[in-house]
Image 1 (cartoon, rainbow, N blue to C red):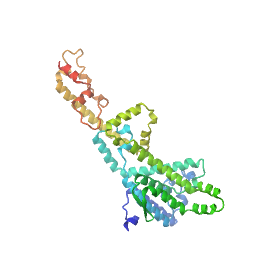
Image 2 (cartoon, rainbow, N blue to C red):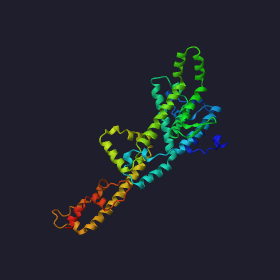
Image 3 (spheres, rainbow, N blue to C red):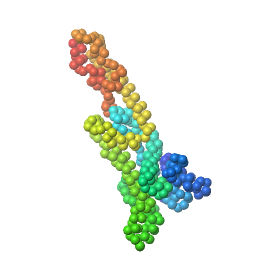
Image 4 (spheres, one colour):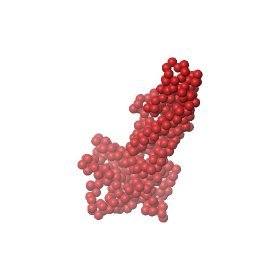
Length: 378
């Protein structure tokens, strides 16, 4: 029975907040504490009453049986998606993370784990704002705003679509029936149409005029909602979970250095603004990771400077410190010693893949080669 009881499901923070907001608004409208017209989405009143951007996603109607169904579906599907959701290094712009060693990448993964709920909330909010933007843009040309007073059901179906695309082989229960996840969004949409007023109207009009019935059906609200759900849902799934995560996945290559070379060649032969993978990464990355990555970069530069200093000291000890400062026979004494400039270390030194820097690496960083050392000794 626990599998059929949504209250027995341990809800995660974002899902729990959404479910509680749905129940609270349904109770408030059922007890006449607030009018439903103050909660639904009106494009013309969005600026004067900005709370509608939130309440239109949390109001599913008064307390009734359909509300219980929505809560059950959200508790199942949205909670499962939140449980699986985790921001990844591959989602960050490549110029942010290129050159980070393994230790700093591990810190970044720990930060992803700590901010898991916030990242999922940003993910849901991004989808919600794209729904609003789509409706606003289309309503400028077409009279569709009247079919989108309640935006919460559409958001719930989009999240269900993304979950089912990510786990197509899993089974999902719909009205007590277990079906494969890849069929669930289409079955849900068909059942909604089957119990809608559009189906009754279509059945009645088909008896009189088939062409007129099809014309009315294709311009009906349920068709517009279906197109919006599958278009927006597929767009976000394609960008984040297919294009960035699978096609342009840095960790899927055998070596990160090879990926960096390939990316550098791509950047060299492409226009700056045409870097589509990076544009998508900026689009899906929460803004709070930018300052955190900058902190990691500063830490890496400090580590690089410290390692380069140690490598320079080793080279000077091997070659002979006194000879380096004023090498015999040198036309311009002090040139070798003057090669080292601590201020230029971040530009001279580069850590790749977190590998330990040896003496040869320090030679490259400070401008010394093996031939220079032998010449200094002579």
